[in-house]
Length: 251
Ligand SMILES: NC(=O)c1ccc[n+]([C@@H]2O[C@H](COP(=O)([O-])OP(=O)(O)OC[C@H]3O[C@@H](n4cnc5c(N)ncnc54)[C@H](O)[C@@H]3O)[C@@H](O)[C@H]2O)c1
Image 1 (cartoon, protein in one colour):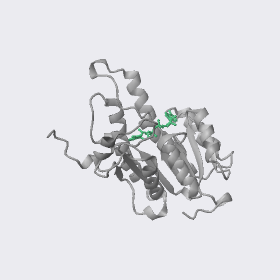
Image 2: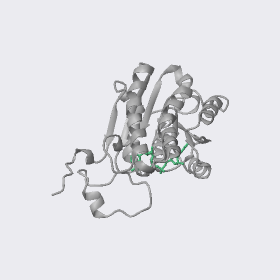
Image 3: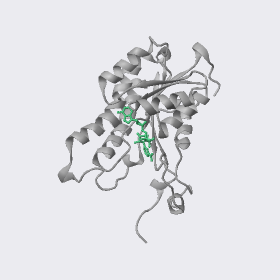
Image 4: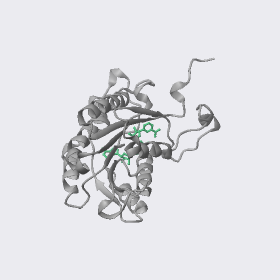
């Protein structure tokens, strides 16, 4: 909290900020006084989210495909010209959130490569092109992975591998970019981002008593990018209502 406005305003890039968890992160950082640059491939939703959240002229939409190097480079390199650099934080949240794919016998390698590009290579690309823009060379990066880095359902190869890579990449980046730039990861469990109705059982199976909300992730991200987390880097934080701590053997 307490970030000042105008030319002193802190600036955060939130990828995939058009909807879902990314939108909640964007909203939270805006409330804390950041200018938020929403990077998203969905132009229509991204534009309307930026205008919904933009009460103070501090939410800006950038049309970016985070898995495409030219697109990411163009966005970051264009930032200074638009008066949006330097930056203080990057939240790599954009991803293909659907974990389920084909059985191994019919694995579609083009689809595998797409998942790795959008969910994993995107993190390297944003670090590469954001790096020169951090204010005084200092800042914070937060990557949004998934508890699927740790556990699997059947036929979720590409999603699981991409999120596992993200957790490992987090400590590799932290050691390489520190001490100036801290890099951390948040691994959400089930976060309700769609309009579908949840059952009492959906909530009750969680040790915390409920399915997660986008705001649960946003509050953790907000702490991680703040100076209060100044001694924290290279870590992965699980926010899953306790699900990965439950024994799952059938009764
Ligand atoms: N919702 C959950 O239960 C859950 C659980 C664990 C992890 N996650 C992770 O959290 C992140 C956000 O998930 P969500 O549920 O809010 O998803 P969502 O589908 O609601 O939002 C994802 C956003 O990313 C954008 N996006 C997708 N591909 C892109 C690309 N190539 N370039 C730029 N933007 C792109 C989409 O347009 C969308 O706005 C994802 O990385 C997902 O894997 C979600």
